[in-house]
Image (cartoon, rainbow, N blue to C red; front, side):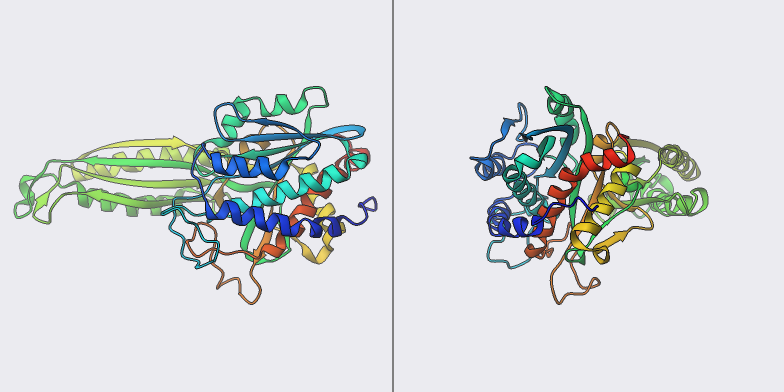
Length: 410
């Protein structure tokens, strides 16, 4: 990457104070789901005055901003998710959430701030921008289908109007357990497909003192939870992993009553389409078998969520090379295997060449074992690392034409 633009880290550093202020504004007022009017307004305020064509979402609180460079070239899509989580904040920060039961516990506030900062840096360097850069601010990533909504609102077609089609899509996700300023990714499967399930066991209720006159669904459900864990270890290839977690159980109204039903809710995580299908079928088979053994019936409802997030080889090579040239090779981490968290960014990567990478944001003086992870009410991040994130977004977009020239358009 000998063509790395000069002064990019300095430009990003100059935007850090604005990024921190934007991040804290959003952090104080977290919003959930697809409708984020305050967050959307914060984005619009941050982009105001930049030479961008800005389109708010029609049905949701998204923002799509387009920068047309002064030189011909490809279209690059950069994305930040915007929504918070239904988690009570426990950080004690001076800018902690003022909304009860809602928190930016996954760092989407930082994602927004870094992408807005990158938009400002790229706008300043417009004379060097080849083609078009599309900045997509997406609501509803946390299980609300935000990426699909933006696709339905013609995100990729809008990006291509009057320019080349999107040939690179890139997203950066902060990681509070990774050393600040490091960037990690891998080619191929990066994050898991996310499916949710509900299993309801139906028996016959009765008095707790006379279980022989009832068909108790609770032991059946307990046996089923254990059987699902055994099924994963015995039917799924350890090198093509799957995770099944039961996160919620519900049954009964009193300790002296055998209920009619017992229900379990949980999640399935897989990193290949084949194993995703295999696990879905196996859950149904195991549930029906356990139910039959206990003389009860069972209903299994599996809802498919986001697909596997699969990084393209060309995009990943470009990102890793860009980060090494920008931040130094010691800041680059090539991940040996995927993580089992999920991301609807996979919907975008199903359609265009692209990648996601993780940016380390672990606070100074805190070990990886001590750092609170994403989706924790105690999660905090090193805001200084956002300067690296701004620079990485910018460099990935600026350098893509050079990557095409060297390796061809994927």
